[in-house]
Length: 249
Image (cartoon, rainbow, N blue to C red; front, top):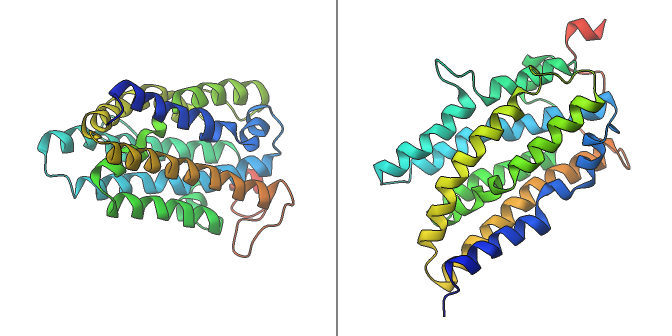
């Protein structure tokens, strides 16, 4: 017997309650003002690799979609990140955050210094969306169900605890408060409508768990490299590298 739509939705939300990366201690450190300037910079550099890859993930998904209506709806995700004539886009906003924390935006955009584990996790997510069923690809995006809460907490915590935080540097997060609910509505109803067997529901739930692992593993890598035991792997960013000229003097 296939569990009801309501039961399945509750299962998905429980995954977020138990596994979303807002529970990671790095976010407690960051939002509570406990990160050093270099720890913040390491987070910005590594998270940029994820931001940079999201439009490619969405383009890979769209290349497999045969329904024009779904392609039209999904296209806004790429525009939200890459920008349009009237919208600078999330990637540009993230680079403004990079500049605010003292990094050279060109260095961040080059994706040099990204932790190996960050690359592996994010690249695995792009491959997942490219290779798995469309249902699983959409289900993996449903971490957006839980994103508004973490963005709101991040805005509050950064404004309270860090001098770099202002409306300009935090504009990425403010915009995601508006964009994420729109995106998740499309994905959520798609998954709930199409996971019409117990097997499909299991596959969708596993896809969402995989995505939470992708997000969690990035923070584990940051913690190990820049918090404790603070062992930075070869090739990863080291404090003092990639600074903006105005901060490097």
